[in-house]
Length: 139
Image 1 (cartoon, rainbow, N blue to C red):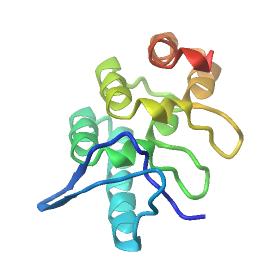
Image 2: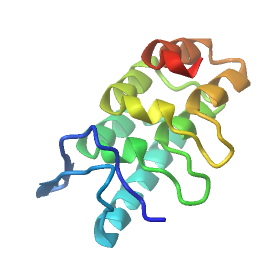
Image 3: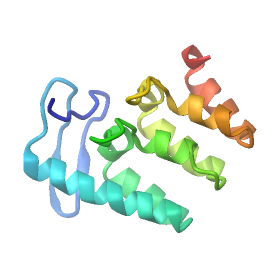
């Protein structure tokens, strides 16, 4: 299956390149998919390093990465951050959910949403509340 980006975004910036519209029904070309995968990798590394400023700025510049799914696990960025043991600042999660609220409804290869992972960790009550507030259908 081809990777697609979510319909909600109006555009995204790729460092000096013309804004690229993304839609759910339009497959993204391989060059763009590769560039977004690189950016997503940078965001995940920044999250591991707890560089939340970089996570937020890269996500704002390239909002498609918030809902882009990993080919292996079918998890998006909100899944990845929700299952981390480290606490992700509320401001970061609020910004990501603001950029791509539909990413909260996405299921991974196991049928789990980001809310499932946040709740399973047990130490993420603030995140669970944020996810439920933003996506009450996930309850």
